[in-house]
Image (cartoon, rainbow, N blue to C red; front, side, top):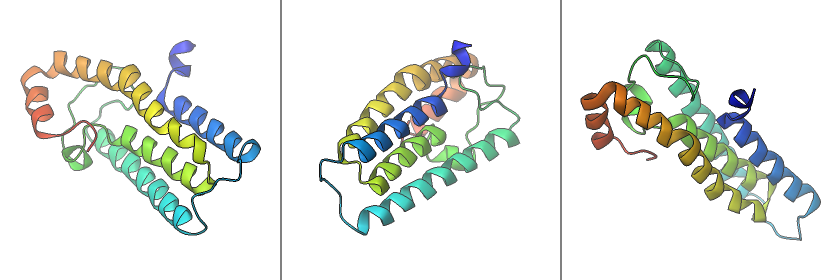
Length: 150
């Protein structure tokens, strides 16, 4: 049961709930501004969703899993994976930041680096260790050519 609770979307949902609670119950009169935060927030949310969709498409095309705790059948280096090794996690981070901007949840901005740190320690490092063990030279080449985040 804990294995299914400890998934990136659950951590993302937790961050979104905390940001929404901060915006709703503890705004403290702070805001980012009337229009630009909504625009940038919307662009970040849309871009994050697009990154996630492109990544899932590439992983499905390669017939490998998108579930973080499972072993990959193939190393995906095509499509969006040419630009970032972790497009889904990058998309999650963009979505969180975008919603924080859209909601004017100023204090919740601290959640973004915390979320990135948790995702990296709980998911990215173990995933990359599994990929490194399974795909050795191919993963080493890929990791040299493609950055973890951007």
